[in-house]
Length: 399
Image 1 (tube, rainbow, N blue to C red):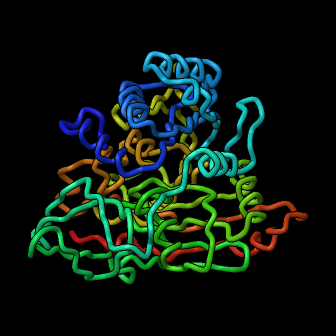
Image 2 (image 1 turned 45 degrees about the vertical axis):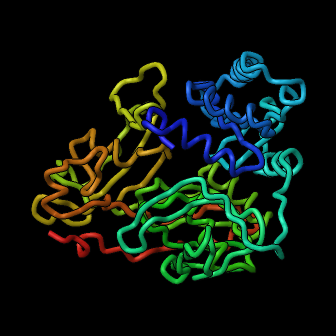
């Protein structure tokens, strides 16, 4: 749902009627936004329990105490009752994979958030043995199957190609996506970790995400996400398979015991065969845009990106890129600021060149994870097992 969209309000109301509770995510620096007030107002009107999650507490400019006061004032302005005002507050960093019930005590994992959801938001009700009842909240359209109803199963169950009578002799069909088409390639696996190849256009966590597809593909396994890739970046993502491995990998990413290497096809000819780029980045949340500056400015965070040239091919060049810091859109925004935009990048790239090569996705892939755990770490064996992905991006060019 996009704030400002013509049907944003209607979409919010339809979705809220399908859920049993709400996790209200608020930025620890920016605080409550206009859409925060709108969504919260609708949730309170429906008497939905709310768990407040103050995210990005790891940001240097985070102000969690002030944000909590702002949220409580918002609850009061919206005439929340005492029970609603007594909702749990969780302080988290989705990037670091940690959550806590106090902003003064950093967490070690996301368990406090999960516990708050389980303990505060009621479980779905319904009879799985009853006749199928589906609450349709949104109507979509596809040229192949026609109108598509998206909704929540209140009672009963669904199966592939099941007939469902709406009224009279009007019949619809329930389609469930073919899991084989969504199969995720495993690059490396042992008893503690699994590394997979994330496709472009997919988030690591959330609805219809990499983690969700892995759980569908391997129903007997549990996957613990420990880091992320930008939605449009392909390549290696590692998951922990045990809580112990999750804690160790979270620590590894926090302490920078993991080096991430990428291959990127960029437009242009670098002046040098290798470079260590340093700059400052500001994330404009409203525009979903990263802005890079050569000099320090208020609200900007330092970034560092290293690259070396692997191959030049006409007007495009294949680089190996190493992230020293890890910020959203860092590689694409930083390289674009050096007049080396990633081919296929619709946000920071050159549309004319993208069309010439018929690239509608950015040519950027995480191809190697190199570990440097301490010797006493239970995952130190990975130090001798760098995880690699074969990704010949130049060979994939269509132009």
